[in-house]
Length: 337
Image (cartoon, rainbow, N blue to C red; front, side, top):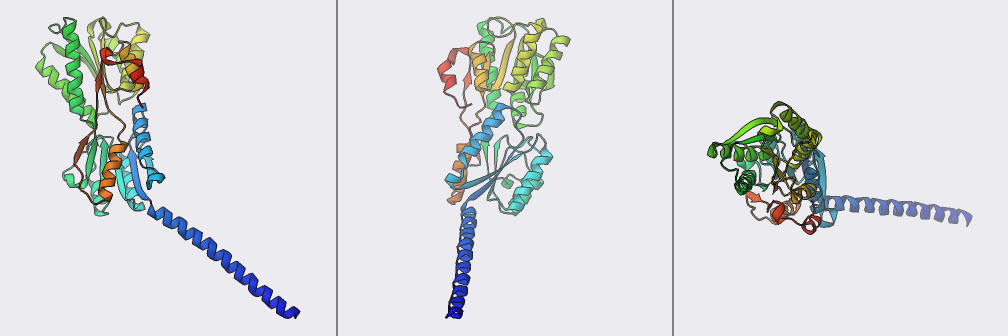
């Protein structure tokens, strides 16, 4: 009897172990299935050099969530194209479903985008665009019309100069460029160059690359004040807000007057909340928005692709421009960036 009970006990123990193993294995398979059900998106950013860049990253992360059925893999390129190319190749090796690329510069992407195409991974370009020999290497672009932004800034600056009776005077400009070769730099610089061709009394008295950073903007403006002199500067054309913050810091240190009515006019791009406060106060004369909230646009494109629909090759995000006359504290407080 004892032997029978022992044998039965052994059998029950084996069945219990098998049951536990089966349950555990079933749970593991379910987790893997859940993981496979998620649509995997690889997102390559140039870096996190500004609050604008952070706002773009946050917008994409908020759009592609697990609750919506997505797994987002984020990579920071540390401001180097080589890093971004390596990250894209990592995405390809991982077999992601989609790649979102915000390129640091326009050129140099043909080879890696061809690799993504060969792997049947759609690539969506955002923020800055790319220039490639074959545009079929990427599926779509979402971002800003940088030439239009520049034209808007020039138009608003001319209105201010005309209102102050300075439109016929010589206008000396300090030009702080963004990262050379980026879409934002090329578009905004082109707009200023066209304005110089149309206005013989406009002159560039100092120009350098600020790399879209506050530190470089401050350094360039300090040097411009030393070499040119505040009395010989009428306008500072900064290609983003970080550069404008740096230029303003340099002028504050030097005791230079700037802003509306008197002093040097500051033109800037991005329209982050801090910059809009400065614009409302008259310290920045013209502020042109560069909208970083591109996540919803990207999400909509991926959803269309998932449904087998065609998507537009080019999508420009909605943007505005500002002077002190169309800004209120309430408007600024309600903005997301």
